[in-house]
Length: 259
Ligand SMILES: [Zn+2]
Ligand SMILES: [Zn+2]
Image 1 (cartoon, rainbow, N blue to C red):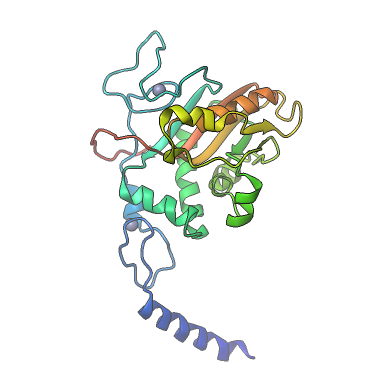
Image 2 (image 1 turned 120 degrees about the horizontal axis):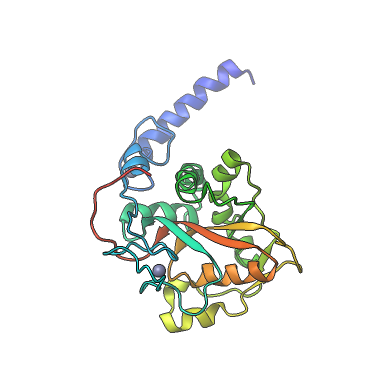
């Protein structure tokens, strides 16, 4: 079949599809006729980011400057911290952020991963460019969940940081031994228990001497980040940091600001 014949057919088909299912932004639902993008420019550039002052450890926004004695904030995960610093870019309470995460994770719209990973890479530049990160570790899925979903959304979110900064994505450092219920569905006290013995080093010294950045879509209580950090430290990591797209806490209303 010649290309000259096929191309107009494809164009007609795509115009018809566009009429029936016009492109809509996966964040705000706005129609974007004639565009292939899955996220509109407002969602890409104008969703308010989490602003300082931040908890130096978990990255939650604080109403006053952090305690100089290094005391934890009320959002910090309980127990010893195995990570040095965690940062999140947006509030999960913003419906557009929630919609974008759901589009990737539950509606399998993997096309939103590239623009979201670009946003994360700007966050990396802002928070972690001087931390000498050697490896990106997406929070691992249990192999049965990975089989169902066919991709790890956290690994897709690492893409742009890895490409721009030439930092390898290491899915071979730690693994998830047990399939755990989603953290958000659990009572806070059972969250830590839920994660006990969930993550393990792939092999002894798998992360020996590495400065590792954990990447995930959403941080709920920090318990998952802390449990993965613990496994990475057990695997020999020198230091562990974390970066997530969203944090599930209520944020004070502030205007948007560029990273
Ligand atoms: Zn939008
Ligand atoms: Zn904190």
